[in-house]
Image (cartoon, rainbow, N blue to C red):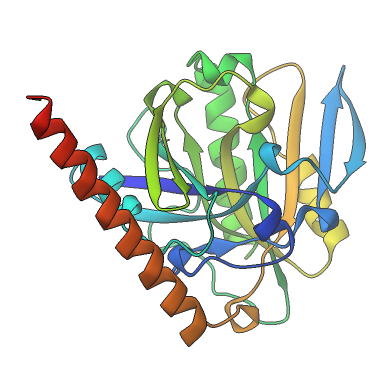
Length: 267
């Protein structure tokens, strides 16, 4: 099974710090360079960042795992990097015939080094959170658009995400981790899916996002984020490794202490 692990943003990521736990994966620039397109009553408007950190995603990666419990355990032992980190584990949603969103296998275009990569997030809404599936014709239009975009060398990857009733958040706080099971109430914090595209200019990326035949009728909000390429990412320095080791030791000590207390209470 393949899961999408989203790193929720905080003050650290909004400064541009890049968690090494997301490698290999995608990390975005802070939201002060982001743009939201909002469609209401068929008319598009723009809203520029920055946005409240709790509303946005700083990066994400795909994790292969036999079960949700296994991927949760993997994430719990990722490098801590900073206290207050929150990772959100989400299921992917394929088309009705079982094929994933994004380019079809064998049709993924080559990376153009002269173009910029962008992530286009589809923000969640009531229909997405309650699992209301769009009409089959609307999904067919979306698939056709994705296939055209891949042939044009624009669409690199994509995925729809399931409603957060199946999601789990892993919170890192000092030397402890905690789990929070979905659903999550505030749709302003949530995304329903994403596409990774490449474009020569931001205006072309905006045109692509505004031209998508989004399968849900009504209001639509999409967020366009520029990707930080790997060569720009900060190395995990010896000082950061030493800090991570100290935090891991404190975490292990806390877990052992908790297990000892549970044994004393007869649990």
